[in-house]
Image 1 (tube, rainbow, N blue to C red):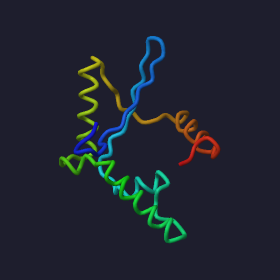
Image 2: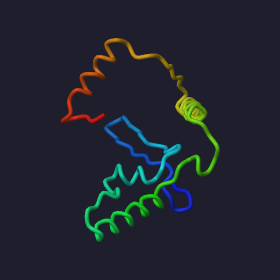
Image 3: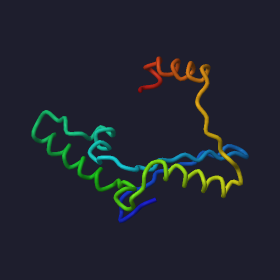
Image 4: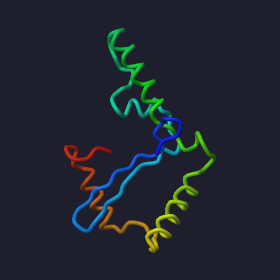
Length: 120
């Protein structure tokens, strides 16, 4: 989803036989130079030429992405509730919110401990 040429929502789908996995991201409120840094376009260049290139890439990344808060005043909780409501309505389902069990936290910790596969 785009607004005035800037990406607001990113999403992708994966189809396998009778299944569909939909995943996406909504940037609620973020400094766009942080996005450039995350994409490796940050201003850490050592030479002036590389610095200028890096700055232009950072500016480009800032123009390519938009935050939801740039368009409408919304907080995270309201956004989560709206997305949950929309999914419930469209897919005729209900969602439950619960804390992770001790065993689930152990799985999380084991995944976090593998720096080759996951970074936190």
